[in-house]
Length: 294
Image 1 (cartoon, rainbow, N blue to C red):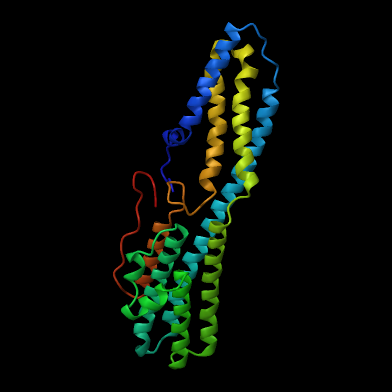
Image 2 (image 1 turned 120 degrees about the vertical axis):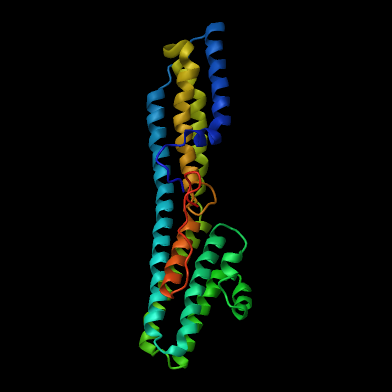
């Protein structure tokens, strides 16, 4: 996620320069044909078409931003629920014999959120997951098709084991289970966003209408702009292509590009809070790299 204040115009140009260059060449062709060939450009309602397209693209960009913001809200819920599960286990497991279990629950939650991060980004499970698991815990959790869900199930089994050992009563177990349900609901919402793209109409028609409008724009402007048609039409086309690109970038809030949510930083926040809760040294918070927080 870009966190610096200054805009990144070059980043936008990097993605749209090819269609923008093709548009500029087409604008030059239309302008040359207007002066070389004896024809009169048709009076196209460019302002009306542009206004309708702007509304369409704005609606699509808003829909994409809603997906991005929902992903951020779900990760906010995940951060709070992770703090709660560590706190609840620490407050309820007061028996000195349960100290190892309290530590295991905290470390397992760190592994869990990193597993969620890897799955949402379609990355293999890495050392940020395995190094927080005890040697005996790795095999049953990592063999699951959904590794994160397997880790969460393991936390539930650990809490059930505490009840069986007499370190926690059933009322306390119910409280802890509510927190685990909140965590599972947050993960399910994230998986829904990741696995459900925008409808095909939201992806196909904006691209089609934007490119069609860019083709017609110089024809409708050439009589009024004349030699300035390539510049004016290209600048107008750049604005529409940029809005189209914004929608494409925000539609997947868990992507690995600069516009995705900073999952690494949020997992680091959970790790710091969990380690602080069990009294172990915690790493430094994640910092932006070249104005981007990953």
